Length: 222
Ligand code: DX5
Ligand code: ZN
Image (cartoon, rainbow, N blue to C red):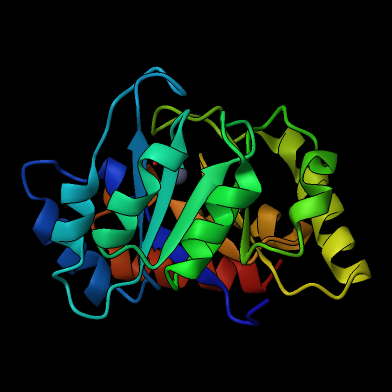
């Protein structure tokens, strides 16, 4: 686990008429990269973006691309998101695939790997893959849409996964996604998260850089 708090604005909340500008704003705002939400209209009841958007974001030099696949069959899509320039690719434990196989494809391509749990999915569902992932993403909303309210009932699961990682001396990061702002982000950090994804909160603010700094200082005080 890296010591520094990592913050990824989620492009889903950006103005889709100006996506490249949004990526450049993220790059200059002190964020650690950008979170790209891929939805297939099946795993979640919404469609969002495909590999072309990830490829567009890859043109912003030095921008870490954290790709979150909310799709039923990641095995059919993962290669196109590797080819598009993703640095990290996260799949869901609830997906219809051989999870370990897909994670190993991602890793073999030189990308960081992540496993994601929906709010209702227990920590025990990932016990046997904690040692093969770089990131564990605990959804703090039911995925599919930006702008939803944070679910505080996920906090004990974050603490449970952090305790399991610590007990096994495993280095995985814990990320949270959904309804994150300075206050809810700090609650997640106190529970054991070290990567915060924030869409609406950062893209609707008038000064993303100042809000990112604020998130870091509120979390540091937690
Ligand atoms: C939800 C997505 C999130 C979303 C978060 O399905 O996975 O990444 O963009 O948006 P906010 O921060 O607006 O809840
Ligand atoms: Zn996401």
